[in-house]
Amino acid sequence: MQNTEPPRVRGLGRRTLVVRSIATVANYDYITDVKFREDGEIEASVRFAGYIEARHYTDHDTEAGGDAAAHESLYSSLLRPGLAGPVHCHIAAFKADFDIGGVRANTLRVTSVGASDAPPSPREPFPRPRHPYKVLSHRDVEAEGIGASTFVADPRRPGAWTIVDRAAASPAGSPRGYAVTLGSFATTQVLPDEHPFVRAMPFSKYHLAVTAHHDHERRLTSPYVQYDGEEASGAQDLDRFLSDGESLLDADLVAWIAVGREHVVRQEDLPLVSNFGVAFSLQPWNFLPWNAAASGLPPSLSEAGAGD
Image (cartoon, rainbow, N blue to C red; front, side, top):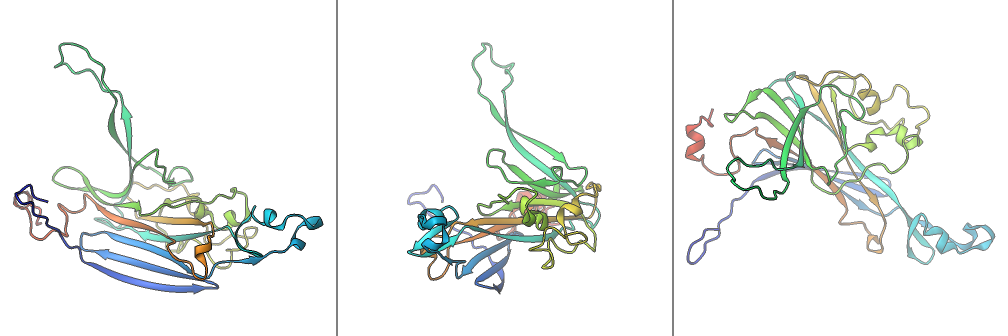
């Protein structure tokens, strides 16, 4: 909006190429969109649709004919008399193989936002109370490992997860890269680590895990172990990928991204589920000299050699 009289409002369009895939798995439809945006962003989203996972309950389901509804409400949402929707989770997992600048030249950089006490200013002749201010800290993750290169988003500890090429810097000195950002509220596994489901699908414990690339580490899970956490040896297992402890500095990196939601069923999920899904984005992070969706190149950027 321009500060004119009368004010004029202008907008900028952003073209997007959408690739959609729909998979029907039992009673659910998983609608996956991958959006390639003009400004360099790649957004992935999954909508969970279809019919709910439901069950019937009666007074015979409880011992000694107790209160069936009260007993069922411990595990389910009560939708109709005798009809319940058990709580369960949906987790969409993706593999992002980054090659920024060079195949073997990428590093995981974590940027954190925090607060620090403001130092006294030498320009002030009289001391006065000063408030804390926001600061940035950066660190490069040296090696893969559980807790070292695995992350769960925490709104109390904001920041950025980026895959960068430390040898390719912008005119300002910032390394070129791409960031992994969550586009929706996403949960992780609530079951304990020793639960068979968690042992079979350890990716459900993290929003992001980064490992060194290996051709045999093709995916996060397998239908052969999805329901068998007792015999998961030799399978596609993210915790096994992380256990190598390999270097992540200037290497060929893979980001494993998992975004999930606990499905607390509601009456509005009948007859079909809607308004329920997850999303994340891969966003250029100092990769481009300006917003590529903008038409034309600003003169200041052109003079800085941004067109190279």
